[in-house]
Length: 188
Image 1: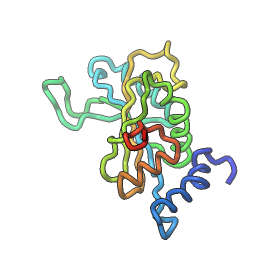
Image 2: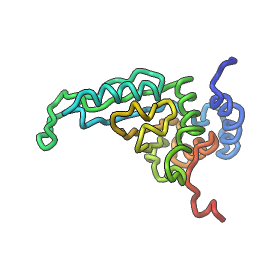
Image 3: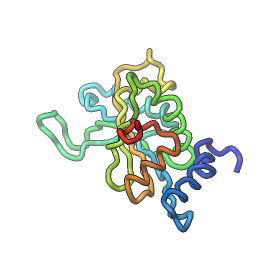
Image 4: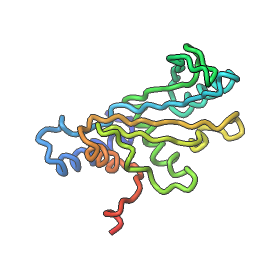
């Protein structure tokens, strides 16, 4: 039991009772939980220079703490000089303790380092309780040394939950401490 991620303990002790009370769940099994976090880094320029893909794999390994898989093109696109099977990106799926550790670092350290940060957009839910957002540069993560970066790459983050609605997912992430933009009703 000890040595669990701080965010998992917060979820169990504070977020679960809050969500059960707010949505009047009859069973603890109905309370939404974060199931996985998927990180994607597209490197289209790797068609011309394969070192960019190697650097992206290394950076995503440092950010996530897990070795990412390499994405390949599913079909050929002549306008982009892309052939089926070419390596064009990298992705990794985080679960359990590694997921909670990453989310904790993301919320507490990395997101506040985003330049001109006003909060994460509330509109980025997909209708099924999952949340997607992009990070423009991988340098917001303190693990990445700015001097070693070959090229600034964007990063897509998907947080998958068991929530049935976007409202439930929003309340789950907000209770965990996710920094959303203030809505007009919250300002009053």
